[in-house]
Image (cartoon, rainbow, N blue to C red):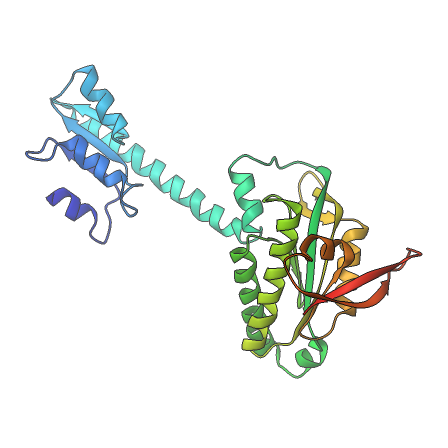
Length: 299
């Protein structure tokens, strides 16, 4: 038990050399260390007189990275310790780099890549998605009234709140561009297209309310439809995003929306009309398409 207390005290050890103990066995100590968040990544080397195959197997099964039997060669033990300290340092460096790179990706995309569900290569496919655009009303006027330090702090504070809400509702945060935020539902996480559309609406509504709380006035647009999604760019620099007329329509809806409201398309309306009360609004004309589109607001 003394070993457990020492291992969980700051500063945490870089490596644990676990010798034979009375009371709780070394294997039990190792297993216990593996269950605790601040010690489960510390490499453990067993130092013991138990040389049978069963004990050695138990040591590695309990989380050990090395097993040194008595009598031991001090130089060999020192070499093993140095090797595992280097491996630990390399792992921590990679984990730190991974966390930094993760800030450039939506959490849902990051998780799907690092879990192996998605490959990092140029490819695309078609899928029904719900797409949301939001931006700040009269942002240009607001930006011109601030110096760049004040503007950076204010805008990043707002965007951070929008990102928190997106993650909470499990949306895929595609990108920030200026004051605008683009989020979509349906990939890489998806329930049903109706649930995706509903979650998109709920996220947008919470964005509106949070923006009001922090003194920012925003508007948004949502559309549901078949989009092209995938990695676009070059072999060396690509962007996981969505394209197509359905994405353009969502952007068009946002520009035609009203302050403090989310304007959405008829296709989105069909997905959520039995769950959320809606009001019909003006039809929207989209550049390059002859017909007009029906639009709706949430009551």
